[in-house]
Image 1 (cartoon, helix red, strand yellow):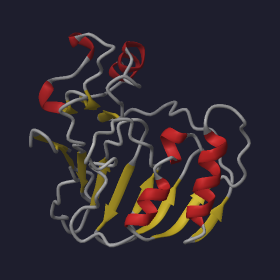
Image 2: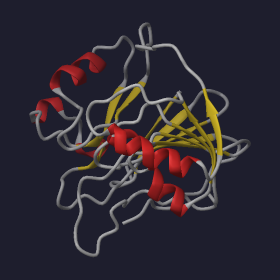
Image 3: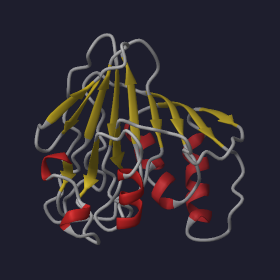
Length: 224
């Protein structure tokens, strides 16, 4: 299982919503600038002889990640960083520095992350909370797992956003009914056992137009 290579349009920006099964990961690839990744969670599914991080291989031509941005140190957001760093060089690690939490699993995750972070340059700093208030997207990608995220309430809140044209999902949300899942053509992964770690990719152009493509079905739709 791997992230299927795809040609990079020039000029433009590619944004991959990557399936790490339990957590979130987004890869931004620019034809004219640095490569950025946001978060890298830990996969839940493990099978004998199976790569525990399917879908995580870089697109064709990617030889390093210039900036890796980590929002917090929970396992489902930073737990996959050490094996990712072992696969591909990461030049800059961007985070909020000290771990301020003592709950969940993040004590050990933070220690492993800091060890991996030593291989690159550390950029630390704080930020402000952003609830996305006032945002009116044309398209939204629900970066959910099969049983995490993508609840009926969250899906409905996004669906009701003014001006929204389409929703796409990284996984079929098994805790929701069919009505609260999108068209199968816009769902990258439909199940747990046959999950191939497929992505959803956005190709954005300088004129504001963009195309969203499902790595599993090949279905794509363009927006202006």
